[in-house]
Length: 232
Image (cartoon, rainbow, N blue to C red; front, side, top):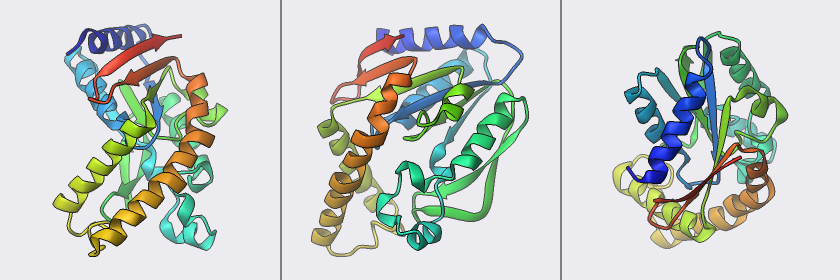
């Protein structure tokens, strides 16, 4: 663990300890493939070692099902604000913030869709870390978090991480949507289009502006190490 990792964990633990007896919600925002999930689990492990009970939840579960996106003509805007069930997400956060257990739909990265009928029950205790591109996009969501972080990186580095992640999926998940595209040239073209026409546009227009609402901005280097941690 680097000094920046230790500093981030220590100050996060201080924030949590200052509000005992209630569910403490931490939000982690940032662009696609920037490392939100990795940071969430690193913080979770550190907080668990410090004696806290921790759950990590991804907001992918609040994406609208593919059939709804297709019917609304939004299948090529997946991940944009309008492709989430924001009301359900707000209810989820409100339940936890109010000390009540909540349920999240389950998203499959193999089928790239919501799993019909499957939910994850999240108890209202300890710390709940919520990570996703949309975490800080509405006032209702921002108000629920006791601490919010934004993970920032050079888009070129994020693209490299995105490509590496998809390569792992192709190699390890043969039943996944992306792996079932047999023609490598077609698959590469679709991936490039998804990054350029969807992910980068979403980052520029909807995700990066939420950095202004974060309590902490975490800047990452090309090797994934933390370059800077700015507390506000």
